[in-house]
Amino acid sequence: MPAKTRYVTDAQLIIIGRRYGSDEVALEATEALARWRRDVGMLAGYGHGQGVLDAFVVDLAEHGKLRSARPEAVTGKKMSVTARDKQVSLGWGWVDRVGSLLGVLARTDQTLATALATATPTDDAGLESGIRSMATILNESKGRVLADAQADKRLAEVEALCSALQASPGAVHTSKGQTVADTVQIDRYDGKLYVSMRDLNSAGRKAIRNGDLQAGLHEYTFHHLKNSGNAAPTPAPAPAPAPVPGPGQTS
Image 1 (tube, rainbow, N blue to C red):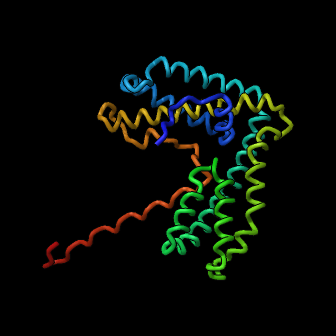
Image 2 (spheres, rainbow, N blue to C red; image 1 turned 120 degrees about the vertical axis):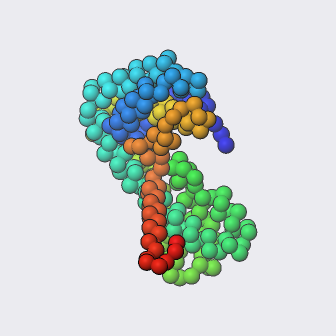
Image 3 (tube, rainbow, N blue to C red; image 1 turned 30 degrees about the horizontal axis):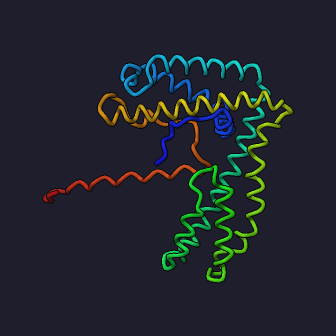
């Protein structure tokens, strides 16, 4: 599995930052900072000691200045990110439907199963290309799909979905008439803080698993930032309580 802590360019930070609303990044960062300050002694051995924490504080302060100085850009970005999330969620819904209906055929067709596994996207960045690849497979296989699975309807949705996915990241840079330079700076710090928190969370979970840090693994996860347009999984229902033995019964 590729390491997530490898070198990240400014251009990549900007792309990452476009995915998230600046207010949510700030909220996530404030909570992460509190945990980091509490656990900095234990996290130092994992590369997240006081010096790295201090650099994060500087970035968070600069992020706050940008948000205060460019409120219209932040508001416009929030609206654009919301629109993007909607399009991404629609895209993942399409992937779920098509993946399921092709999956029925793939159970008895190894070639199809391999092609489907290769085409199915694994993250938002590959969503558009994944949809197009899956559409090609669906078009080639639709003669084997039952009519009630609506293969033609799914194929008819592809162009609109992909066009919306192409347009939504760019909308962040033109919303509310803000200059590209203003919004790019906000995007960059959104991305920079996100990557810092991602690495912090990874370090924190490692420290917990190794017994160096007494905390719950759930603390070192994102609480306000989604990693994908996928809908959150439905929590598993709580198990039913065991029946209480009646008089004369044994458990």
